[in-house]
Image (cartoon, rainbow, N blue to C red; front, side, top):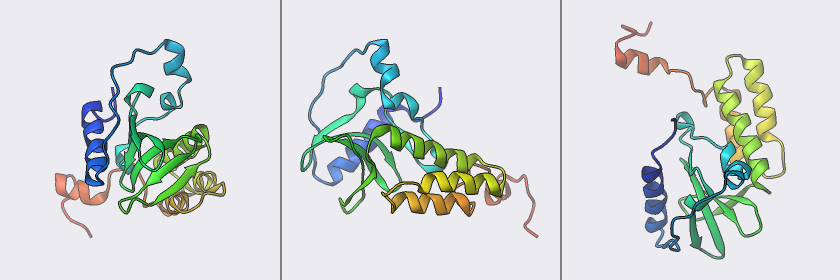
Length: 175
């Protein structure tokens, strides 16, 4: 199984919320049907530690908060918390508690996230450029524009960085 330990992820989300003085609403254990799990947009998301993204796996694991309206926090990244609002929009909540819309609906978010991961895994400049174009599509720029830039210029990558190879001893020196 890949991804973040779910207890660790919920702890990371709780810490981000506690740092902001926000208490999550209590939710008891919920059992889902097979259809509920498979039909959830969460089933299309996977952790990608190379870009510091982690997500809950099931709808009942979303951390529900009342923070200027009901939000369901389902992920974290280095830029902040990722949440679903009452209107179905996906929001990024940064350290200053600023909210920006990442997507108007969950599946639009999934599609852009997949393009970003595909770009990070790309082995050619042309493939990175194509992924960057898909990431940048849409009216909600900001975060996605930064991700598209990082993918296209090769800053967001899943390959082993040369400095890691140097540290591991696989490379003796940089020429």
